[in-house]
Amino acid sequence: MMHTSNIKRRKGFSLVEILVALSIFAVVSIGISGLMISSLQVRQGSQKTLNAQQIAFAAIEHHKDLWSVAKIYQITGTNPASNLIPDFQNASYTQNVGVDAANLTASYGCLDSNGTDRSGTDGSKLFCTLDNPALRRVTITVRDAQSRVTAQLTAEIGRPAAKGN
Image (cartoon, rainbow, N blue to C red; front, side, top):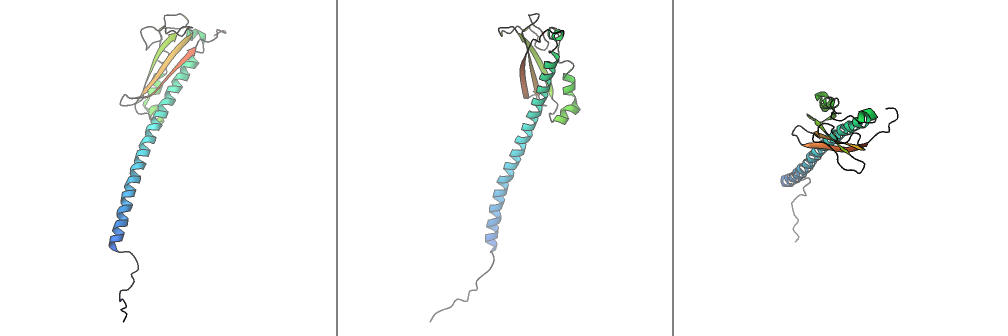
């Protein structure tokens, strides 16, 4: 005689199976959310660095424009950024570009035609030991609220042609 089983076939999942599936889902979700948070933090840091670089680049361009005039290029003992820096340190401007409490500094140097540094002792002012150097060097540094350097650009700008400037 054959015994037939009276066990009915069940349809659906047991409570244990559901708990195991939910546990696996929770572990995977936590891992993915951690990756998303890290990705957002990296993106925000990259955006602040990019904005700081744009500020520094704009300051370099200001110096290029300023020194494209031969009479201004020859002036020594001045700070060409003195009218520029307060604009870039303006709180509303720095908030708009995403750099918190941006601290912009400019340092200057000059080089002769051989590339030898002929700067004076005061890097915050344009002071050269030559009357009309072949190159002016400007370094723009942008720091964040914790005084960490977020961008630093250096440019060497050549003496303009003396065409009635």
